[in-house]
Length: 549
Image (cartoon, rainbow, N blue to C red; front, side, top):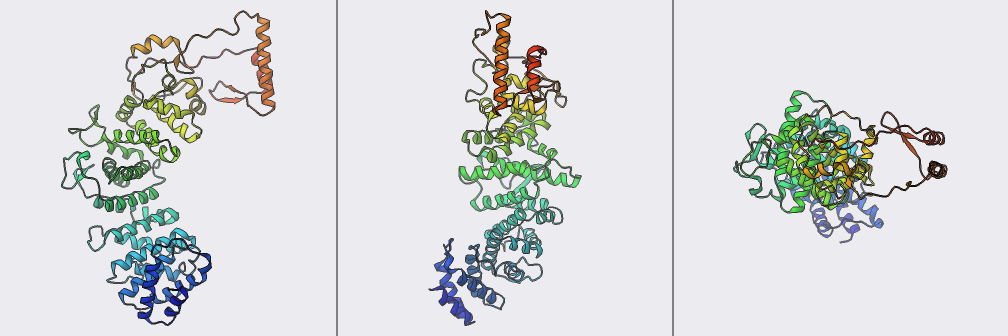
């Protein structure tokens, strides 16, 4: 049916005529997601007429047809003019049963779902709509319904689009994010929603299990259903939004308990799987992202469950969750795509966990930096987890190489000599320069003083290892052998001249290492002084004999 014909029938004002016309339009455009510019004015007029109908008393079938039409029209971001007014969004919120000022009783569930979808489209495409939704306090109405997580009235679709709308509000409006977190107690509210969606029970204070399957190892549990996974991932995304700045902030005792409870649920998420490998990885990705936002002291709940048959145990502690994080990180490493977005959250989480939990650090070190035996291949060459990580220490993306280096540095207890031992001075130089540690002076006082013996292979080759590359290299002939002192000085000045030329043409910027361990610009006078009055330089820090964790 032609759009102008549908408009004519709606303009008659007859509810029955309008119902038939809208049902035809909705059926014809159910899968329409792109719109021609030619029909913009007609679509705007249709939207205006539909909103007029929604302001009247309508029979349920006509209500449904009207909100379905709004949902289709709201896909067109260029024709939202009539839908972003205060009255239009308030009307849709009333049909979605989330308007605290005008709540319709006995609203049809299908109408609620269509109204929620329409609001999601409007917020996704239009900033004015976002502002109006914030001003109308829609988040309060949604929060009220989120509290009813055991009410069978609300179908999966209602619950899902409640969460999707909440996600959009918290992603796009900073004040709504704060309001949900503080005023509406969002951590507890969404934690309870997560608990109910996963169907958890609590054998111990910070140890969860799937109700009815207590004692069953996680790998033997059936995967979460598609509907469960969809809702859980929306909850995780909302929680990520409202906890974005809490990782390193101080929280009070009450908040700490909430975060630790949430951390225990996230551990359960990490150990659970969804329907299909791709969906499971997406599910775990959202879980890892959120774990990285939690205050650091609350991460101890990852280690709290008792060691059971089939668990990975280290130093008497259950390492299942840490092992899962390590596997997740290695998958992302092997894939190699968009490392900044996919790898960094897990890297940062493992780094901070290792920094504050001795058992986690020692376990990770046993997996990432096992006792060194291979002294013939460079640290970046090979297929071990250490090799894969060291390769990224010279990655083109600064954030990636910094985070990788930070993890290895923490696993080395922030010992410069040990860090160089496992990575080579060349790979380590970036982090050491940034920290002013190029002279090898560092403080690792926050770590325990445990140590282990070196491997036989490393001890035998230690004196022959080139600290820059981290391997034993074939002896190279001395290029200055047989030269007189005058020839050596001539070659040195020739080199200075070459550096000077490159520097003057802005091709390189020569640098020098200061007494504070930091590098600074090297000018022509400095180069001349260093040639004629060379300062004794300490050799790059060598390896130490502590394999301790």
